[in-house]
Image (cartoon, rainbow, N blue to C red; front, side, top):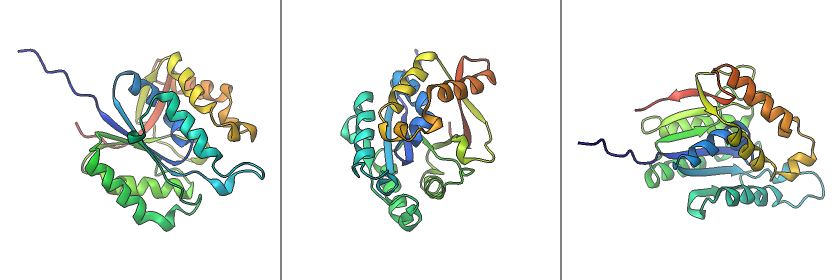
Length: 217
């Protein structure tokens, strides 16, 4: 008899702040979505207090909504919380309870979030609650944000094509607030150079690298 067609994976992406997933795993997200996998996404902070003077407090929320609109994600596929930037540790239990709820309601096959080696305090919180919630139930990968690391273990690579990096750039272009701050890591030169550098390591045009926290087959 023929092998049954495998069902699409349910993949949950976790952003401590708006733009973390797009930067660390935007090409992978584009590739998985293009392959027909189900994408779920949670943002924990929209960093209202970090915005420059004169910028509306809901600016990053609206920019993220442009991202999910571009991707065609329905409202049942993403959640946006407004915990204060740099104070996620005060909401650790609420974050864990939200992830446990998602584990029950969505049952993701794979969870993609920040690294244990990421020194941003909010990223540390999301990493630990991600592992606490999903360690027995899902594969867990950590994405790379080089400006936050002194160490990153490149244990897994996702090979990408030019179209995936183009889509990653389109996602990032929604964040006008960050581009206006001249963040180097939002430039086309950096995004393409970073993806090319990781691609060279696996004989691909482009790639993104991940740490493997759990791999369940």
